[in-house]
Image 1 (tube, rainbow, N blue to C red):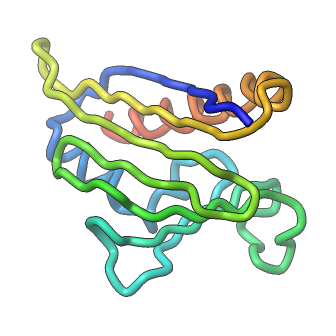
Image 2: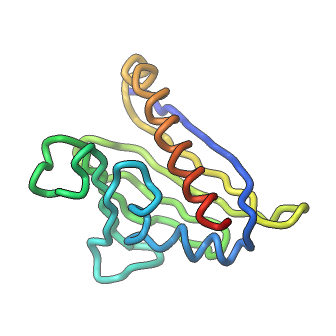
Length: 149
């Protein structure tokens, strides 16, 4: 098994606090994440120790009825520094690794958004899946950025 990294950076025309408020609203992430339903599974909904579930698949709106046609990603927030940094650990049976997003104020106004994932998987499998994962995340984050226009 290898630690495989994917990263995406882009600019959002909105203040950092506004971007943080929207990206950290776990339950609304399904509005912009490609074919994904997201929900909080813990008693707390923000901060370290928050548990989040995300089901991605063509029938995501019908989860759990069609749970075999997709991927359930279980995460726990391990670092929480609003409005700058959130880190999660993937703790599900299939997807292992970690993820983070960092928000920085841009010198040109707005917010610089950095997203990163470390996926623990055999290198060959990761190389086969990486283009699809990258494209899906890129499309989702572009939708997120457009929601501020």
